[in-house]
Image 1 (cartoon, one colour):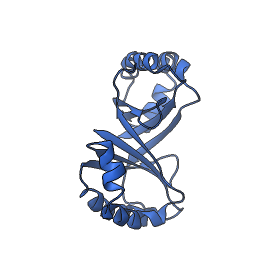
Image 2 (tube, rainbow over the protein chains, first blue to last red):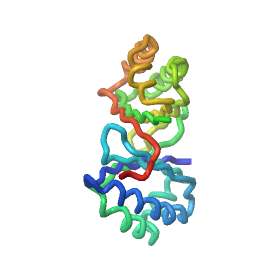
Image 3 (spheres, rainbow over the protein chains, first blue to last red):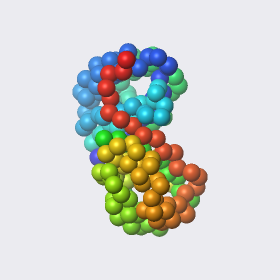
Length: 99
Length: 99
C-alpha cells in the first residue's frame, strides 16, 4: 500500500468553499481503481494549508490509473480553482530496513 | 487529536543507520505524555526523505510537553546527526467546516 501525500495551499479566504468542493471530490476519487482511503487535515500554523493523505493499492493506481483518467479531470475541476500554487505531491512506502 | 507531520531529509547514504536510530528513538518519544502513535514512511521519489506521522492528544503535548523535556534531548541526540537540514514540522487537525 502506498501513501500519496499532497500538500495544498489555497487562496486566502476560500476555506469554506474549498472544503465543500473537496467533500464532493472525495466521491470522485474514491471510484478510481486501487483507491483505498482519503483523509483531509488542516494546518494549524498556516490557515490556508491542507494535506491529503490518500492510500492506493499500488503507485501506478495513482500515477497512471487515476491521473490519466476522466475521474482525475473531474477531481481537478472541483478543487483546482482554489489552489494558490501547484500542490506538492510525493509518494511514501512503509519502512523496510534500507541497504 | 493532533497530527504532527515532520519531513526529514537525511544525509545521503545514511539510511540504514538512520532507520536503526529511529527504531530506538521511537521507544523514547512514546514515553512522552499525550503521545498516541508514530508511523514512519520513506519517500519513493527522493531516497533520503522520510516523513513521521505522530499523533498527540493535544498540540501542547508536543510543542511544550515533549519539546521541553529530557526525552526530547534524547530523541534528538539519536536522530539529529543524520539530518541534512532542520526538519519541516507542522501540525494538523481534523477538518471541521471552516467559517
